Length: 252
Image (tube, rainbow, N blue to C red; front, side):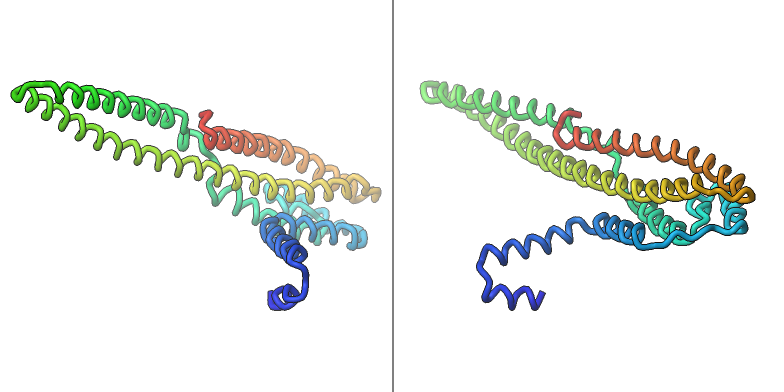
């Protein structure tokens, strides 16, 4: 940052702003960008190493216990999978991203509209009474003044209620947007994990050793079952994001 500030003293303003935007963009991409870059680098730079029979056997045992990443025989993929799985736990299980039965905003928006219409009607009634008051007798004026006072109290009470409802709607819509963003982070974390299992499956499918091949096939069968579970979780997460977006917009 010190270098950026020093450089800005001599650089054109637009170039400095562009550099600042690049720093901001890197922060915004955050974990997803860095993790994907890390995976891409390792994926292209790590030499292919044949798995030992014992590694395959240990992986099959882990698969029998449904231990996920531990079922990957290749150590570097397994380690990367464990790190990626930590993000799935953090972004999909520990942080809320669902809105259903929690943040439906259409009903509240409808109630706000009804309250606004009611207040508008009360104000019209008050204005009508004030017009009548100007030409009313003294005895009628007192009665009209009492009614005006009652309307003013009602308008004041309903206006405070309306503002509270609007604040609640604003908070709920903001929360829905935050949950939708969290759901998208969950999707990215699941994509990272699935990418590693796909890499492991590709490696196992290319196994030609006659002793190792049966173990590789067992692992492929296990990963294919887990892929179906992943696809279902991915589908449900996408549906949750769409629901939150509809809550944010007020469609639900």
